Image (cartoon, rainbow, N blue to C red; front, side, top):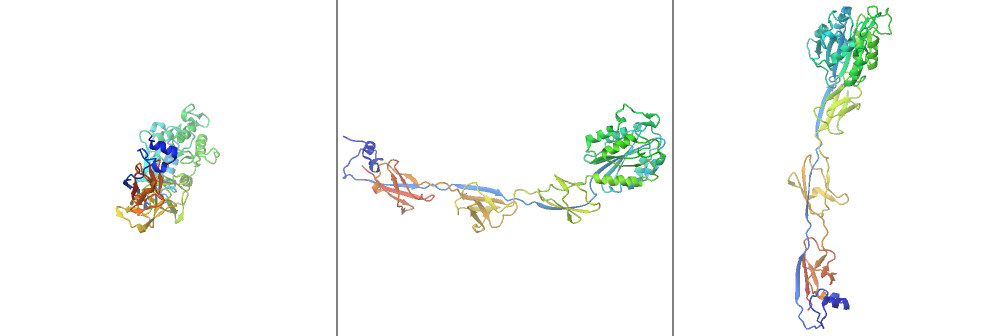
Amino acid sequence: MKLTCTYFCLVLGLSALIACNDSSFKGSSDKVHPQVTRELLQSAYPDALMVATQGFKGEPQNESFEQGEWGALDIQVVIDDSGSMQEEQANLATKIAPLLSKVARADWQIAVVTTDPGEGCQRALIKKSDTDAAQRFADAINAGTQGTGIERPILQAVNGLKCGTSPWVRPGSTLVTLLVTDEDNCLIDNQQGYGCNGEPDADGSFLVDYLKSIREVGKDAKVYGIYWDPSQSQSQCPTALGQAVRLSQVVQATGGTAGSICDGDFSTTLTAISNDVAQILKYEFDLAHDPDQGTLKITVDGQNWTQFILDGRKVRFTAPPPFGSKVLVNYTFGQSGEMRNDFPLDKVPVPGTFQVTINGQNVDPSTYSWDDKTQRLVFNVAPPENAAIRIVYKEKTPLNDTFAVGQGADPKTIAVYVDDQPVQGVVYNAVACTVKITPAPAAGAKIRVVYKVLH
């Protein structure tokens, strides 16, 4: 009776002899055992590629300014052109210099409007670039004395700022309004009271609320005045016709200052106003480029200056440098990536398999090394800025240590060679019909298994 190989192995436990033999077991020893040679090949490590671009430190940029060369300043003068204002107009008309004394280097412009709504929203616009600015200012302030006797400076201040026919207020400018009148807003006279009650501009909040809608009142928008201050007696201001109670409230609400309309010379008042305006000027300027993060350095007269905010290309001083000081700005622009001398790889490399090029040129292996702890390729010297780096290497994948042999192998006859060198300690698995080689052969190694077949 014949027993199959599998049954015989299970019953007698002779798997090492016949588990992989599909033929019937025969115990006779007089059969010829043919020799089989199996040529195998260990798997190779796959190629891996890492491409990187060296960072760029950015182009250095140096710029210089003189404090006061920046800051858009829009000034509006609301001049009373009623019958009692001839002397006061003449007093103010020659005073553009004290008005600009502390802000002359700003990018200023002055709009003039009268207190009479019937005369429109702008009498003149004088710009810093005008060669005859002083004369144009004088002409605009000398507005005559034919205007309404019920002055409406609050209404005209708003009309002048809005002025749809001649838009002039610039986005982001520091905005100043100077009210010059010898009476209060809408005052008929001290006995008859006010003449625009019920109108939107009867109260000073009409101007304050409008300023709040376009600026941050007190910081980049203020109202100043030259009028009869309510705290003064008639003897202190004998030429004025009425105390400016409502106007004074507007000036106080915006943080401005005021002087007396009865002064024989407005120079002191205007200089004080100019000095106050200088404190709220937006000390800012635009750079030629967007600075790289963390590279902007500013010095004022050779001293480091940190009181500024950077918004894109715009630098805003949070505290104004002294007038006339020299401001030097240094930064880099166009920075990309990070300058480095070590580069991580996506896969675990086989040491010694690197082929590195920088900008297409082969790199000498002595100029870099593999740091197994950090898993990075480290260059002795960082590649140049913007360099194209290409690293080709072998990925260290697990190697096979178990190889299949044919069925019916005689375990006593199995011999294994790796690259033609005999290997000891081979373990044969008669059930799986495999040999296990420890350690696993090197990548790409040629493996030869020789054995005789049982019959």
